[in-house]
Amino acid sequence: MNIAYLDASPCWSGGSKQVYLLSRELTKRGHNVLTVCLSQNKELLSQLQKNNLKAIPLFPVFEFNPLNFFRLSKVFRENKVQIVDINSPKFFWSGVYSAKCSGIKTVITRIVTYRKKGLKKFINKRLLYGLCDKVVAISSEIKASLLGDFGLSNVELIYCGIDINEISSEDKNRTESIRNRYGLKDKTVVGITGRIAYGKGHTYLIEALPEIKKNIPDIKLLVGGTGEQNFINFLRRKSSELKIERDVIFTGFQKDVKDFLYATDIVTAPSLDEALGLSIIEAMSAGKPVVASDVGGIPEIIDNGIDGFLVPPSDSKTLAASIVKLLKSDYKKMGETGKKKVLEKFSVEQMVNKYEMLYRSIV
Image 1 (spheres, rainbow, N blue to C red):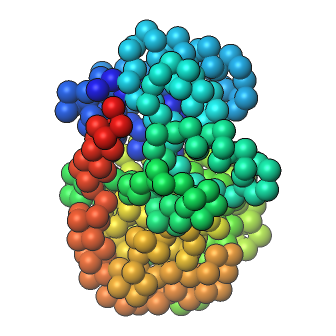
Image 2 (image 1 turned 180 degrees about the horizontal axis):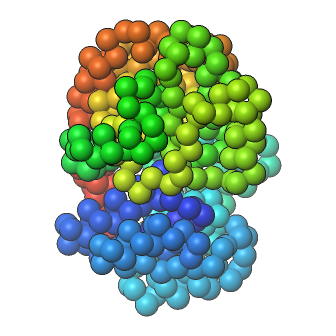
């Protein structure tokens, strides 16, 4: 099959990582795959090109820019595309209409919960989702919102997957090297990884740290990832105001998330909303239990009290108490329980198998 992915993530993210994994694995299976993405997403382009995967960079796109229609129609025609899978809202309209006008089967992969109401919902149902051959939801929570709001019969649930082999084994020398680099030897380390943005709950985690420190004096917070610099500066000021600036370490973008994860004792994901939570799945695959918000698709990953803890969003006190509770429990055993679950439920193989079956069903 000739497959095109459309991804408008401005930087490396959970969504762009899924596009990369699907492109890589489906190419291995003999399919012709190309990815259309933004020229500014340097890491996605680098990963695709490093693995000899076809990538077509576009300049930043606007959701209703008519030029996108003509650009994409040309790409589809030149590459004899049979299926278009659109992963970003900025490409939804131009992607769906350029594909349908070219007689190409169309899939939208919905990676965030649908929030629009009223006229916008009606327009999206009739003129966008209703024209797609399939709509993929990456969590049951997203699927339920699409079925409830639209009454669509073409929605499929496919969980995100990760390459277990890339994360599941530890290089102890590299772990020790990272801990030494950031002065974490013999410290208790809580990690948070992924895009740094207000909605990911970093503010509440930093607010929780002084309370955690009362119970676990040697605690350190390791913050991996990139984001809006103004917000990162705000978090730094917040840490200084709370007099914990020496306990909060910003590492920047983590090319190899595995090394970051193994340098932590536990991981947290205090998001205000989350479609599923790829960073949580990655942490669990490394045997790290997670304290995360009880929102979106996160409860589909974490069994509260079994392989992590679920807490209300925007609640730094409960977050602090749950982190302390986890660190004072047999958290390594909980981590191993979560790792087994990820192997069974969230592997890249299961994800690719389901997408391949879905594509074959509509061609």
